[in-house]
Structures are given as C-alpha cells and as structure tokens.
Image (cartoon, rainbow, N blue to C red; front, side):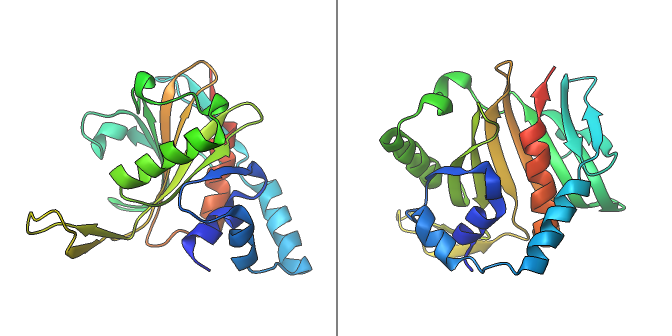
Length: 220
C-alpha cells in the first residue's frame, strides 16, 4: 500500500476533505487492506486506552491529550528561532525516538487562507502549491475537530533536487526518516504546527496516538 493510501487508512474518522496528490479518496480506500474482525477489535481497544494523560503548557497556554506524561524541551533546541515545545515520549539519550513538536506562530496568518471556508477548487490549488514548494510526499486538508480544518502532510523520504543549476532535478536526497506535519488555527486563532517524530519508521500506533492528541489540542 502506498503512502497516499496509508493517509486515508490512518486518518480514519477524522475525514479527508481534499487531497493534494491527484489520488481520489475512493481509489485510496481501494488500495487499503481490509481489517479482520479481530484486528478491528484490537484497534478499537487500543484507541480506548491511549492518550489518557492531559498535558497543559504553562508557557504557551494550550492543552492536549498524550499517551503518557512527556519530557518537555524547548522547540528551539532542535528548530532554531522557533517558539514552542517538544513533547518527548521515548528517547535513548539524545536520540529522540517518539515525540510531538508543537510550534506556535508557525505560519503567517495573512498568507494562509481560511481552511474552514475554502471551496474545493481553491483547496486543490492551495494544496498543489504546498506540494510544489515543500518536501512533502502527500498533503491533504482534514477535519481536525467538528469545526476546524487543518493541513496534514507526510514529509518525503526522497527529494529530487537540481545539483547543476540548470533548472532540472538530477539528483535524489534521501531522508533518514519520515514525519507527519500539520498546520492549523487554534480555537482562539493561534497559528500552530504539530509534528510527529517517530524513529526509525512511522508506526501505526504512534500515528493513532498523534491523531488523538492533534484532535484534542485546545487553546486555553
């Protein structure tokens, strides 16, 4: 199953509104493997026990549900000049294995359209522009909550670039891992990005937990 299909499978009940990769939602669903009844029950039970810890940021004034109490470090420790926090759930020394990166003031509010009122053709053009200007493998607009939409993207594991300056991609750079990146406006208008780091490979349980935290994010 390719990554576009995995987006549909992983997003589950969040609901995909617009695709930015040329694949129709029905096509992606057809490519996703069917779950057995036992697997479905296992997934359902797993979802019920995850994200029982409520984390509230004293510095930035947001709250969300986490799988457990995180170790918190400043976002600037990994992303120079960025304002926010990294919620670390698993690490080996300085090697972060599983974490959520939450960036405040992650984008210029004036340069990003109102995702909640975006029409289908406008959304397709906006997503096409994101794909053309960012190292994403796939990007979609989803319902983050019942009232708020968000951009949800997978970073690319392979990126073509022009090494000779002739304007034509001729080389491939390979990333060490793949991450999920989201952009959204909070319930009080804050411009946020929330990123999943899960090394060395994205795991379905990590994606499920991240999506629960992503959907529960609230500005206080």
